[in-house]
Length: 407
Image: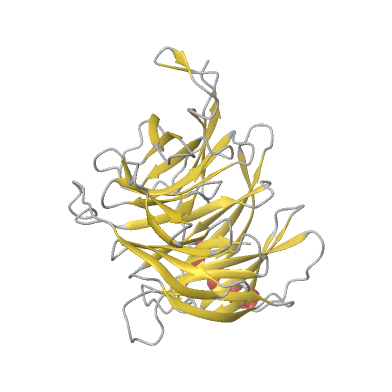
């Protein structure tokens, strides 16, 4: 029997940010939050002020926020490090005091984006370790390989995927390999060429997968241990999505048996069976990300999966919704039951509490879900029910042009 959908969608006008900016933002921006054993630091990536509106405070770099792990209260503690449009931030998987950002080039000598390594300080600020060119232009996503030896960058405008070596202290080393993606799709405005939008490694670190939004494909790479260089997966170099889908982000099931691909343009979610030995991907189900009957503008954005593999969360920009899927094996597909992790059931549509939720994800404990509403300049915290997976908003903090969070 299908689970009942909790559909709580309502249209909201998010003019509140203007008041928040004038009355609360300046006060909270440089406040040093009182840290205790219940709080953790979050680091937020931002973009610069693209509207040049003097009433909207421009971004200056990476900001630190504090999350109370008991109450879910979120506090903006101010600027942690200056950088030019650090739109994506991520953490080293082993060195817990090192984080990275993909940002704009600062000296004007090249159009290539910049990857920056930072070291956390005792007061929560970040000190720049070093920088490296991203190997392409408009680097919009960055991940660190599970072994901590490589930074993997998706360069959107140039359609290139790059792998940068990391030193033992986490600082950036030399460029190991750059791959030019080749493809295009039927959407003339968004798919005239390949656009690398996301790259991450599978759970065992054997392959790294890249979402090519322009080419409607997922590209696969591996590290040749003999030649010490990254190469295309010779057996399964790419997997096609539906024409015009525009794959944007993906997430692996915790057991590594499935890959969930979020398609920005078609607003669909694809579930692929994944062979960790070969990197082969086989489509087993595709589901819409929006409520039945929704006809407005929308672009799907960010995806995450719970640690127990029971729930999927993803955001929709335009509809300004967080969609929650339950993943279970009780439902039949075409008359046959399938292994746990395949069947996708929408159980909740939750307003993101702002406009244009570009990034969202679970905190490392899975207790809270964080949504960054870029155009309404707020970051919202939702408590996650461990039993049902459903979300309840518990707090919000003002932050201009937030585009990503790391811990």
